[in-house]
Length: 278
Image (tube, rainbow, N blue to C red; front, side):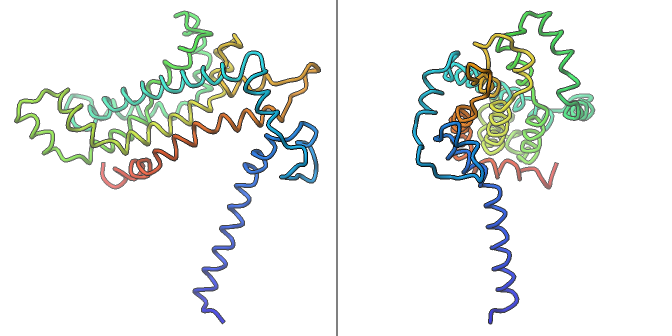
């Protein structure tokens, strides 16, 4: 007979496998259903393997829809990449200022900036709608990009990481006559790769999956992003073609998986940095 410690370990492993299976099964079913005809998507009990599986769904999604799936993909890529790069730029500079520069009201300003994280998007929808109409960026991709360039959470993560960087590095640069911008770009920022990777991954996933903002601020179907564009996959009777929606969603997952797999090592380091100090 096994020892109580061994039995406990086996039971824990079995329980983890069961829960993992429960979490993964919908994704596995989704992957399998992306190759099924519409009728078999609704089959019950659900089957993972079908005799009629083919690449027809992917072919129709990628090449036969109007507006095309690739147009939605391009719009999503533009809004996501530009907003993520902008977020990285603004949050790194703001985080450095809040962590290493001394100015009056610094802590109070940082606190106010963090409080904005508590304001849900639903509260800002109407003011943003009116503002975008006034500045003539409503129904343009800029309506999705500009508000996302500033991220309190990203600034917080960068600030916490910069706090842990020894001041001696910065002081050494100043003694050598380096300007503050040179110290930031050449000495400090290269050390912040884990925090930047975390910001890239988190913001990429959030922006790529964003649904409410493009639904509200875009009216031209040619400007739709993937999340909104996939809902246009309907037949002549107005019935949603779930097999095509699932196939499109599977393709839309690929960039997020690639970004996560590339940056997961740095992401863990970035999330744990500054968790004790600061």
